[in-house]
Image (cartoon, rainbow, N blue to C red; front, side, top):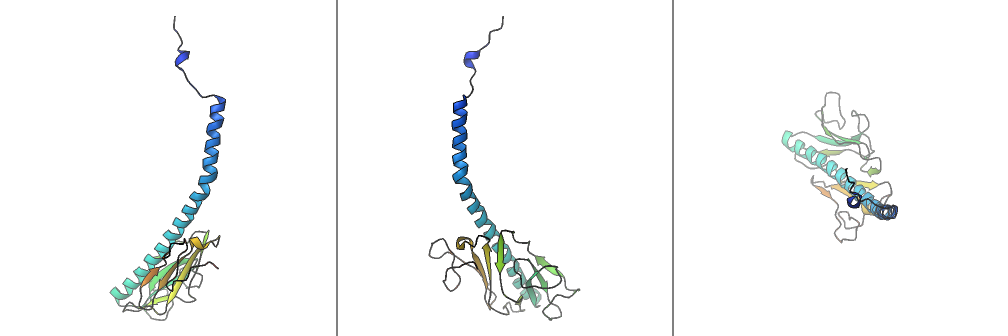
Length: 186
């Protein structure tokens, strides 16, 4: 005859299961909003770093190839626009007319920024001369759709061609621009 070992089998009671579910619920209630903030901030940082990399690539190309190189937002990869929330493309402007011709190859492009984010930038393209200088001081402000200043990041291209990303110098949770003023999202 086979004996059953019921005395060694264990399970959870309904009360223990309910307590476990309550604990999981509390952790999710308080943990998810914090996790969402981290995700939003990391997405903004990733996108501003991608834009920075493309702009630095454009400057390096201008110097290495000794040719006018342009960075601009585009909706169709053939003409520049002023909506910096769109894809950014880089091309060597071989004919020097400030716009992309059919024979001018796109050297690199960014991905489209997240639908939860938006960008404001100059009303013109950023152009790098063969000596590495930029045509004008330019700033690109990247914000989350919540307009929370804690997520704002700014990228500045100086006339010398240097690319600078905003920092939180005073550690108040909001980045400052190159003038030291706190960023805000319009």
